[in-house]
Length: 119
Image (cartoon, rainbow, N blue to C red):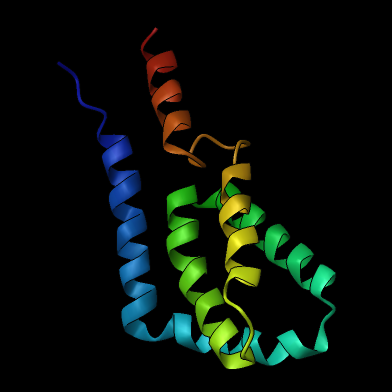
């Protein structure tokens, strides 16, 4: 009956952001910059920084957009630093589910917000 185009724009926008990050080379450049910092930082501090940055960005962007932009950056960083990619990407993937403050953080939040405005 009624289709929520806000949800479609949210998911489509995250795919467009990922496409822009990848094709412009920004994810590789950021990955190289982060990769040069990895050997200088303790593993616990590195995981804390990754989780904190991903959680904060997933509050502003959608969780899908955050995962699709941050995971290629962290993959490039792990290649640059020659570490196991799971040490960076697994905490980042889990941290994307910590988005719950703003309505744009997750698609279920958008659906609930749209239904509550109809009442």
